[in-house]
Picture 1 (cartoon, helix red, strand yellow):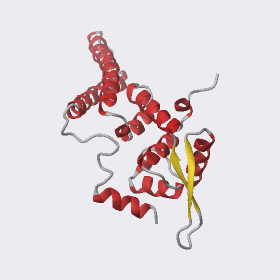
Picture 2 (cartoon, rainbow, N blue to C red):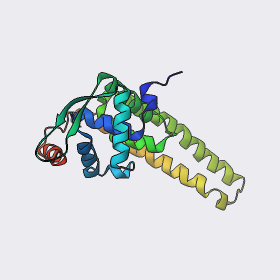
Picture 3 (cartoon, rainbow, N blue to C red):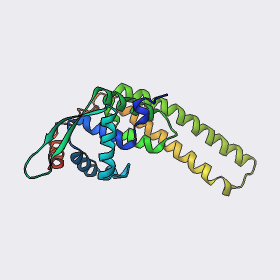
Picture 4 (tube, rainbow, N blue to C red):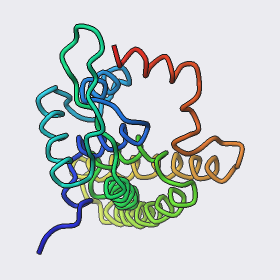
Length: 208
């Protein structure tokens, strides 16, 4: 059975689609934008990987060519645009990865690109995630209480203890984020920052 487009997306593919949702651009601009935004903290960025990813996205019909940049003495650069199928795949991937707790690397990318979803979608996905986190936290907390009551040596509980603390901390952070998302004065969405001077200067610098 053929996988759905969102299921075939790699993290780099997601980042590329999200960039093209900001506007049409060539791969060189994509690389420069990712590096200027310090996206190396999320995934390894190389020119070769990105160009290979762009080719796969085009063959899958998720992006398409819209022109050639021939400015100055620079090499010709193919400009790509996001298709409707590409938008659907991006949205589906983000919704899925924001909701689950067993793929932490993918979640970080989904969170970084969550502004590509509507506010209500993000809230719904994160509430689903919160329910799963809370279940895991209760299991670890009660497990520690039970283990200590049975005099289980502390030295074999340190990993369990760490996970309980991390889950508790993420729940606190997630509750704070959900509160902010519920306030209309909290800017949200792909167009919330695109006309700022900082954003426009960043795009211009990446195009050089």
